[in-house]
Image (cartoon, rainbow, N blue to C red):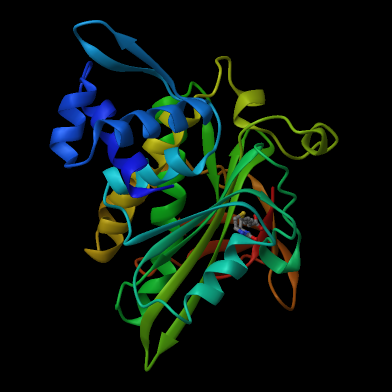
Length: 318
Ligand code: BTN
């Protein structure tokens, strides 16, 4: 989106009414440029009324994942340095990895559709157009590598908080990277890192959230969308806004080593306690019960032989 269009949108968002002349003056552009930007926003689905003697009023934003909306929300929260929005991409995660070669800043990549979305353990993440949020965020924490075990707790809690703050859906965290509603998966994320001399240089966090019931999702018994799980309509702007706010809050907590302060809330919203679990780690599978989380983010479990084991990376079956 052009800078002018973005600035005009920001001006409309700030005031209930604002005249074309005022926008032109504030942005130091011509009235014709303001008018063109407004026409273009209308074409993108923004409902903008022109009221005599009052000016323009932004009545409604489109309930669609689009670049204008994504950019304006990310910028409003000053979440990262750059925003990339793509209608279609193979995978936002792969795209972010490539961009990292030319950029040394933080950034987010959001796509309306992925052709080759990927999940953990080489699984695929089916990503139909306008059906979910597909995004990869590149953070540059410059923290010791030993801190990475805590990152997923902050991110999973941020997603859980966003869901519970803007919807009536009861989302629970499945260790380490999933959000569930009941026994069905609503969201998954993967965390990849680039490190140098025991310092985390970049974290590439790829998040997929099912928003609406796509044809694909209807056939999958183990997954659910936010729309399917809740009782009210999903407003993309409200949800994305809260998600970015929560992710920013979570990242600040991670950077400031506030792991101990979020752990009780994380445990309260997790779905792994007080039940039998199957832990699939890279070389074995065993039954166990989750006991607690230690100060470094390891999951302590009690296996069926009565041995307490520490788990840092695994796939859990509920
Ligand atoms: C999982 O549950 O296994 C993790 C799924 C992660 C999917 C997201 S969608 C955006 C980003 N791009 C990808 O290709 N994958 C992640």
